[in-house]
Figure 1 (cartoon, one colour):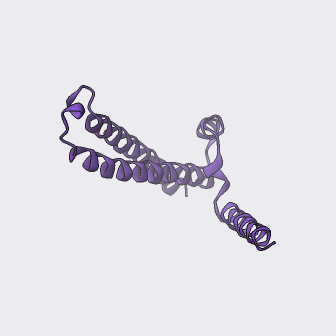
Figure 2 (cartoon, one colour):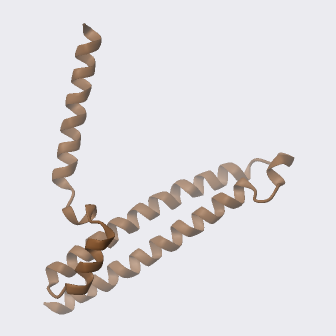
Figure 3 (tube, one colour):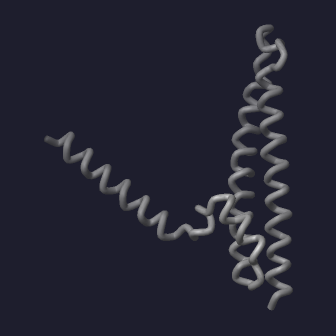
Length: 124
């Protein structure tokens, strides 16, 4: 019986956490790319530009977190000097390439966010 109560408690806590996270997170972060593209085309108010900037800042943070995790994996894999790891493509190469990709995407998102922030500032 205690196992059932523990499971029920865990599910209740999880539901509460998800509900709070959903309430705090702005709706623009859950936008799909089609919605964002259409907002880019029709945006003309500072609020629209700020929504877009917020979306791109969120994407930037996501890519930066992924790059940080991949950087750690790259460092971990670079410690492996076993001869099997020397075959191409080496695991360390894959991690480096993923790190470069995530860093590049984070930079693009940063540029997009800065662009829409400047449009919002100029629209006032």
